[in-house]
Amino acid sequence: PKYYDVDNDNDGVPDAEDWDDDNNGISDIAQEQMPNCFWGEEQMPWDNDNDGIVDWMDDDWDADGLNNTVELAISLTQAFDHDNDGIRDDIDLDDDQDGMHDVDEVLLWPTRFDRNSTNPWDHDDFGSGEGIANPLDPGTGPDAVDNDDDNDTREDPDFDHLENTFTSDSCYGGAESSDWDHDNDCVLDEDDKAPTFITMNVPNNLWIDARSPGTNGKRCCFASTSYY
Image: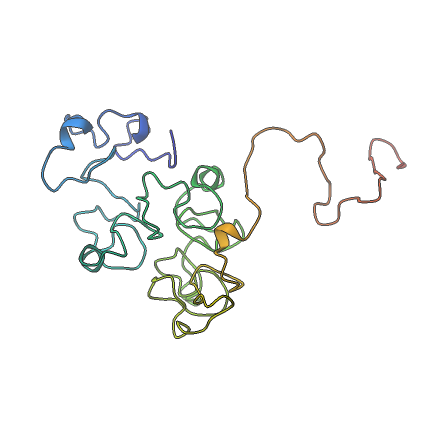
């Protein structure tokens, strides 16, 4: 399965491979033709953002902090586009624009809002952040509840890609400070760091201490009582 290993009907078949995602006996293809039914592979009843609130009861389908009514009324955002980059979540390779593909993030992500996980919908969570909101710290949790999505100390509660109260603060080149630009250098985080990939292959070399690897050509082994 691609993107998320979501299984809405808990039948053991991921939705990306399931002909009937909600297990109601009607194929997804047939259900796509029904009025008021979300287009795409997964069909209603469905929970797009996996927040435990099914879409027909959820006022924020993509967990971006913007009400569906607002998003449907304006052209700059979409109700099923978490990062509002113009690419729907079901076909977006990087839903939270953090530079790490969703298919890689989910390998380290046991549950969407679990603590200390990589979360496809939490821009500043790279594995050491808070996957769930801390009521004592409004700067934690998924983007929809995090008041500082890029951890640059500038609040951005409105999720409009512009730092709150810093809309006229240019970095260089005249661009405005962005919600998802940690160092505010006018290069969004997804383009401002080396690509991150997850692999299940055993590396040829494994450092005992990743923080201070040997860089002078020496190597230490623990196979005997001494090292060389």
